[in-house]
Picture: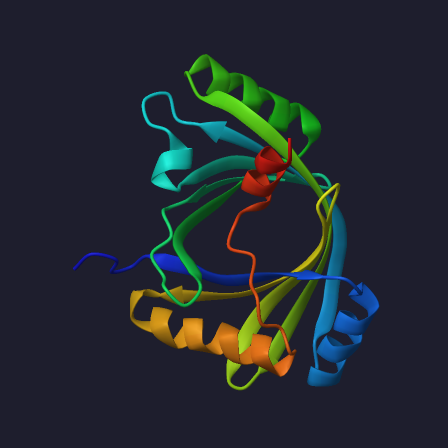
Length: 188
């Protein structure tokens, strides 16, 4: 069956004007702050297909000293941004990230853009689900809250309902469907 064994990222992202108010609301629900780090996401386009038109993404993420490769498939969810995600940790350090960048460009991947952000990562066990939350400051776009659950194929619809339930609990109504990459490109 299509999708069996795959994991899916189920996410809603909201613009926020006051980090402190959002953090206080999350704290009242029992959220725990895990880490704070600066991220640089280096996005690439495939040599023979346009990821912008297929709604896919491929990046090298550098967060502190850690590096990982991420592929995100096209959005398949209706109620939330749901997509197949594969994330693979790779060797640590900026020199390894630079070698990956060089390798992908030599293989024909086209560099699109860097996305810089400061992220506060939190977790929340609420209403029977374990949420990963991110408070992101993305210059010059502003501040955002991401609500995310990881689900397998059979749990996708339940996860979509759950991320919306938390958004409603936080009185968040209008998600931002575009990626930070697309928002930055559109603002140029």
